[in-house]
Length: 150
Image 1: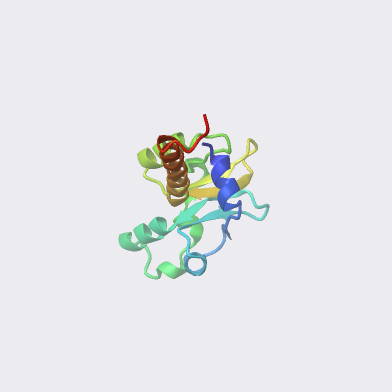
Image 2: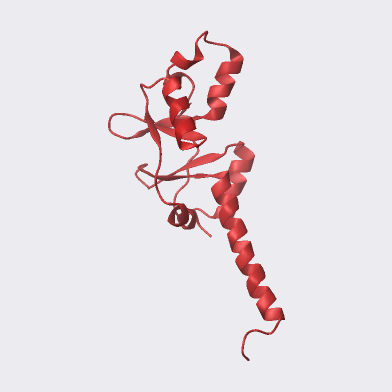
C-alpha cells in the first residue's frame, strides 16, 4: 500500500494557516476542525512549515511568552527546513517507520516540486492498515470455509 491509497480514501483537503497568523488563530482552527496540525503557508500558498498541538503545548509549558495566544505561528512552528514530508509513492510501512522514529503524527504529502497534495496522520495510516487486515481476514476465512469454487 502507498500514501496515494490513503489520500484516495480520505481526500486531499488540507487545513492551512498563514505564516503571519498568531497562536489564537491556530487554536481556533484546530478546535473547529477537530484536527491536530495545520500546514503553515505564505502568500503564494507555499509550505513554510507545520504547527501542531504539541508545538503549541511545548511553547506554553516553556513559558517563553506571557500571553501564548498572541505569539506568532512562526515562533512555534516546525520550519520547512526541518519538516518531514512524504510523496504519493511512499510505502505505508516506510511511513509508519518514519512517524515512529521521528516521533511525529502528521506528514505533509508533496509532489516533486514541493507543492502540497495532502496530509496524512498516524490515525489515517492505522485506519487503512486495519481496513486492509480486515479484508485479508475475510478472504482467508472464506478460503478456509471453501467458499471459492474449485
